[in-house]
Length: 243
Ligand SMILES: NC(=O)c1ccc[n+]([C@@H]2O[C@H](COP(=O)([O-])OP(=O)(O)OC[C@H]3O[C@@H](n4cnc5c(N)ncnc54)[C@H](OP(=O)(O)O)[C@@H]3O)[C@@H](O)[C@H]2O)c1
Image (cartoon, rainbow, N blue to C red; front, side, top):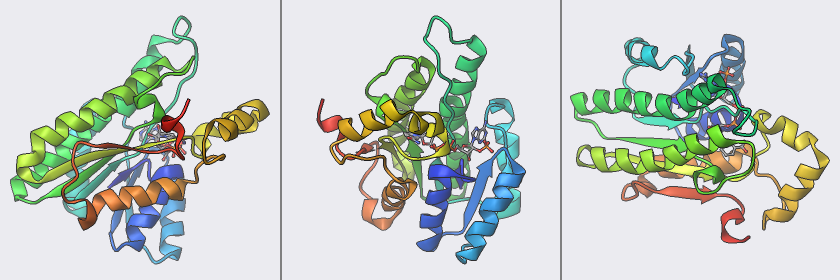
């Protein structure tokens, strides 16, 4: 199950998991985008279903997840890739923007992860959760306080859930991407000064492609990572190794 699977990092992850033999369930709000993503995956001969869900509505996630399991079966891998950004200095940001960001980026990750884990535990099956964190799991920039708080929480939640569910063989890790060329960053990519700054600041000298995040997710979902849990792995072109 890949949340945010209709585009960007989520869709690239669905491709990579599918190419590795997984059947995928895409989750996002827009049915049109989900349908388009499913068609794209079909063309690549990947078996993909989808279920629309607004992850801001955290109270309804459990009932929605049960319906999803009835339709597709219990997933073995959960990739929490849905995420939103709301910009504005902390003094100006509305509380409603703060609540939306925390709901999608943090509370939904918690709620969906425990629905997923409860299902696996009941079936006595092992599984993997991969959260998509951020450079802002570790560091802050001006004007993105809600996002920074939400992704900081994802880093610690990754560790907390890893420790809680290790006895059940449910492994929980996170990939923390650097700047990736996706719709989320459209405005930043269009800003020539910001684009130049990213290329100068990143030791590898460029934005990441969604694929470059997707394959490390597949690594964590694979047998190759069966002794890795509670880790936040930076896939950032060297960003956090220099200042
Ligand atoms: N791009 C980067 O540079 C970067 C860097 C670090 C971390 N990340 C993280 O990576 C993840 C994916 O980012 P991206 O760049 O691929 O973003 P994106 O291109 O904007 O895609 C976001 C995805 O999340 C879904 N989504 C948004 N709000 C939702 C909601 N309320 N309920 C359900 N689904 C929702 C979107 O579909 P709908 O709009 O149809 O719902 C879409 O599928 C996010 O967690 C982001 O914070 C991105």
